[in-house]
Structure formats: C-alpha cells, structure tokens
Image (cartoon, helix red, strand yellow):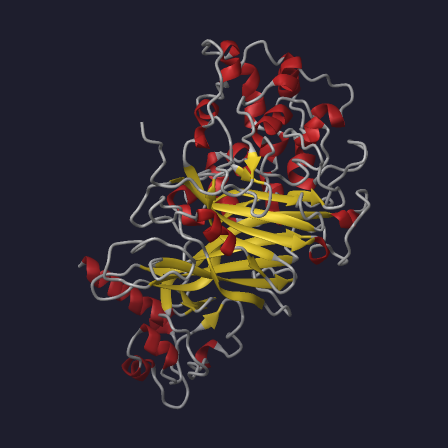
Length: 110
Length: 476
C-alpha cells in the first residue's frame, strides 16, 4: 500500500506540495481543476483510465445536484474514500486525500 | 405481525416499514389487478398534532416481475412532498377540511408516480429504460382526525383516488389496517387461545383477540392496474396453466445512503444512491422464516437472491417448535422435523410458486429462481364465494394465489407450517388431524361500502376508512 509520501509528483511542475497548496479542502481537491499528483483511482473503473501518477483532477462540467457532495473514508487501510453526489456513489483510491482526512480526524482526539 | 416491525433496523424506521402487501384480481373490475402496500405500523388514530404521513425522504416502490426471473420487469415509484400552508400555527388543520384543496388543510402531502420498465442491472441502475413520470402533485387525503375536522371523510378519500394515463387508478393515504391477528397470543410462545388448553403452559381455551381491531391505522399505497399492462406479452391470460399467467409482486422502500443531520448551523441534507431498507412479498416471510441475525440483511437484499434464505423455509423453526409447544398434538409433524425433511411444500409456496399437478386447475409457479414474491395467477377470476382460507379452502383465487384483504393468512400459514401442505408433495404423509383444524381464532372482519365503518371496502382501495382520532378509542 502506498503512503502519501510515496506518491510521485505530477507533470507540468505540479508537485505534491503545490497541489496541496492549491487544493482548499476535500471538495476543492475534487473540483479545482489542477493536475492531481495523487493516485486517485475509481474502483469501479469509471474514472480510472489514466496512470496513477498523472491522473487529472476533473474539471467541473455540468451542474452539481442541489445538495451537498458528501464523502467519507470507507477503508483507511486501503486508502479508499467514497464520494456521494446526487444518486451516484464512487469509491476512489487516494492515499493523499485519505491521509489528510485522517490527520484532520486525529486532530479531534488530540 | 405480517411485517409490522419485523426486523431490528426497520422497527426503528416506521415510515419506511412495509407492513403488508396485497395483490389480487379486482373483484369488481376483473380486468385489473389491485396491489396494496402498507407502511407505518400501528398508527394510533389520535396521534396529533403531527399526524402520520409518508416520508418525503423515502422512495417507495411497487415491483412486478413477469419474466420468471425474480427481477422486476415493471416498477412503480412513489415520491412524496409535504406542504405547509401556514407555518405559524401548530395546527395540522386550521378548521374543517371539506376538500383536498381546502385552505384549512394546513399540512398536506402530494406525490408523484413514475413507471420504469425492465430489469435493473447488478449496479441497481436501469439501462435503456427511461423512467416515465405518470403523474405529479397528486393529493393524499388528510388523516382522519375527527368529526369537527374531517366530517365527511369518505368524500375526502374518494377524491384522493386518481386516474393515471394508462388506465391505472392510484391512492396513497391513511387506511384502516386490515391485518387481523391475535398478536398477543402469537408472540406469547404461539399460545393460540382456542387451543391453549393443549399448550405446554396450559390455560383454559378462550376466544381469540383481534389485536388490530381497536383503532389501528396504517398508510397505504394502492394501485389498480389493467392486467394487460402487467403480463409479459401484453395479453389478458385466460389459461391458468400458462406460464404467462403468473406475475410476482412485492413492495419496497429505500432511503438515501447518507444523511447529514441538521444542527444550528446547517439544515439536514442527504446524498448518494437509494438503498433499500424494507421489502415485502409474502406475508410473514421475514417475520417467521428468517432468523433474527439475518432479518436486516433480508430487507436490504433483492428477491432473486433469496436462495440464501431458503434454509429457514425448508427447515422452518416454528414447525420444529410446534410439537414441543403442543406436546403430543403433532406427532407426524414431529417425525417429519426429526427426520430433517426439507419442506418442499413450503419452498413452493414461499419461494418458487406452486407447480402444476399439485392442485387441480391451479399453478402459480415462476420457475426455479427462489424469490419471495406474492405470486398471482391472473387467469383465475375472482371467486364469487370467497373462502378466507384461500387455496386451503378450495378457493383458487385466494392466498397463496396472491393475497386478498380478507384472506386469513395467519391461519393458512400456521396450517401449512403444521404440515397440511406437505401432503401435496408427499402423498404418503398424513397430516396430524389438529393441523387441519388449527386456527388463530380471529374471524375475518366484514366488508362494506365507504362510510359503513367496515374494516374492508368492496371497491378500490378495499382497505376500510381509517379510525378517527376523536372516536378512537370510543368514549367510555
């Protein structure tokens, strides 16, 4: 299993650090439209065609449903995060995002 | 109870709790099938000021399978929306409600009906079948509050019967709960009052008690559908022996997968796919035949996967208990149980339908797929002299050929479990004499026209008008 420190940098000068600086949060990381260096992999294959090292963060296209986008860490051991939007549900493999969320969760117990 | 509070999780979620499902060829419109699905168990009639209503956050389904797969081929979906005309009062109604558009009808529900054709895929999504919205903003009637608020309830309820474009009629609202049973006796170690002198904890035999007789309401989604809209080939079958004649029916309810509870900074919110939380085809299936540790899983699963629950049908716990609870009364059933005999009769009744050759002139088999569905052979016309024991009473139009509101499903299933129906599949088996006589002891309530106060109606939606809160319980 990859840890976030093992995730390679993305192309076009977008390092993990700049990605993290550019992404404002959980939802932002999914919608800001930068190149994501993280290994974001849809387990159902719907968004998993690109190599893990060069998976682009999808640009916003079409309207989002008129309700919150929700996400949860469905399996921290496997670095899986599940995103729910409208009536859709997709589980991604995203070690960086999962580590950030787990860090945030740990801050609640410290 | 048929399926009132039958599983741990759904017992905490009444508005999504499917309590009973009925399906029968309409006796007054024999070119149609009526399907009823009930929700919200054990409504007290006077439970205001927030009277019972359907869940705006629940997706209700009526499923019909006509392909022998156990998968839905026709789906009707129901979504509700609640309107409050005046939020600055605590009152459900601000005066007498004289029509469904009366401004005194302050908190009201409207609903949509959507029809979907075809199977869903393994991901639960329909492919290539665009849902068709049949109607929007259909009005539900108010709850029956009392003579000052809802003095002409029959008219309100009748106005809430709506016609849909393809010949269907639909109703969604409060009704009298038609399930009749002596629940106190059933759940007290099956201590059936007429036979409790024979019970392991004997007392003098006594008359049974109809637990739901005294003022219990329910919420019903009712559809009356032309038979030609339900069959695989679009025809009205006339040959009961034809495989095209049998349809499977069940109801279900779903909720969104994730819910964010509101707090001071944020309203409640929901997201994600619809997740099934309740289903019901045959009465008492999940209640009687599925062990406690699997009941929630059963509610989440689809009928075509019911093979994994078949052990509870082939070797039912209650059938094994009856000889112990009634010592010496069921010796032949005891031998059957102790031999570990698989109950092929119950598998046919509950999981596959009854094949041809067991009951003259009858079958409602849907193939090898084990699936809990209410199977209805629509080629069998309504009975002119219905017998509440259905097939056991030689009435081919009754349960378990579908289920009519007046069928005594508790007694029928008790007799089946006690071994009466095993003789259909094993001619050498002799049912114990008491098995043929066992009864829950609750007589079938009468039927009557709207306004008669009868438990059942003689026309759509067949379940009687709800008890009103002012008169229930009656003044002493």
